Image (tube, rainbow, N blue to C red):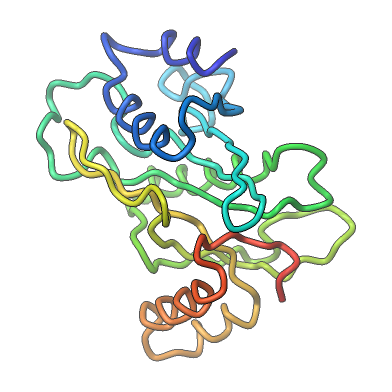
Length: 219
């Protein structure tokens, strides 16, 4: 199913919020058609994945990487009852920038699964993510493969290109997930203020990696 067919299938009058996300993405990628991964069965119809989908773009900026962007944590479809709100649904969408990893034969669909797992957490706990929040993975964020991975947590920062947008339903922040090493996670655990330590670590990463691209081989 193409991205266009998916939107047309599940739209209620007009997918207003979806269009707003598309407009933000078009400012970066123009009319490039993404590779879109959508669930076979929509969540509202009993499907297991809360996200309506994740689009993947190839970016040449800074260095070649995959740029993944979610749809579903914000209000996507026509909903007159929530027009004019401060935040659109949960107020954010996930993004992730990944340097190609040799154990990924094609697109890193494990990131799509990771985003859906975090979406389930948000829905179940009713706790949303914000900038400088951190999530331990209790092991490598990507399992399987031949190469040992030391990226064992993710922190959230504002996507350097997408930032925040205003929609008819309220604000949407594009929260980029940034992979953290075991040493960085230990620093956070040992700090008196986890929030400030995460902020410091992200600033350190940004100095040499302004787009905050995750490299699974980083140690």
